[in-house]
Length: 205
Image 1 (cartoon, rainbow, N blue to C red):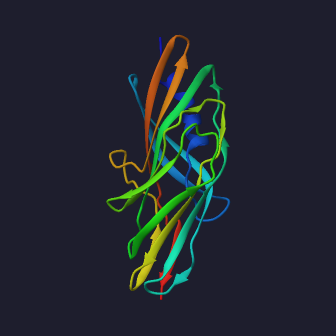
Image 2: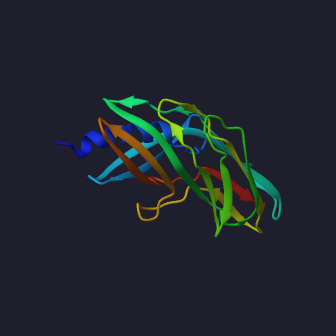
Image 3: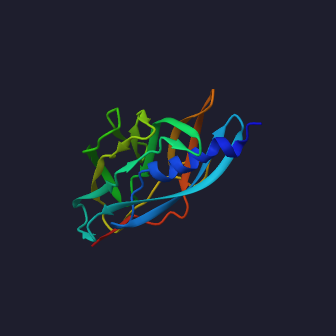
């Protein structure tokens, strides 16, 4: 009998090593609540990933400044408890444009082992980092550094946070392809930050 637990074990490990999450400072971690959907049912899991995010502590009204997110390198397992992870693809990570600021531009630098060119696009108040992949199971990778150019508003605080509040409003999506014997399944994974603290905080004064 094929069980949901058997199919989802690789997904749990995959999520723990793959997800590129910004953190408040070098060595810190952000937590996500995730749900993997398969034809055998759903399974909820949690993950943590370290990274570094930085921004100036203070800026003047109307000043231009930058938020930089440096993502840690990682690697995917090739096999977990007898199950083969074939690849991961179609990863999307979303970060809202902070209140009290105006989006100017954003760009990516660096990155390796992604088998595609990552993109960053801002629309409807959200910046989305996309990696088409595929990133093969067992491969090492380095996601690009993200820099967001913002213009400060007249007053207040500019806080960088992650997108997402529920599985119906996720801030992170990816798809894993898993093989067990002669069966191959694709598992969409949806995640949202839980909790969702500010990654950076800049005071306008």
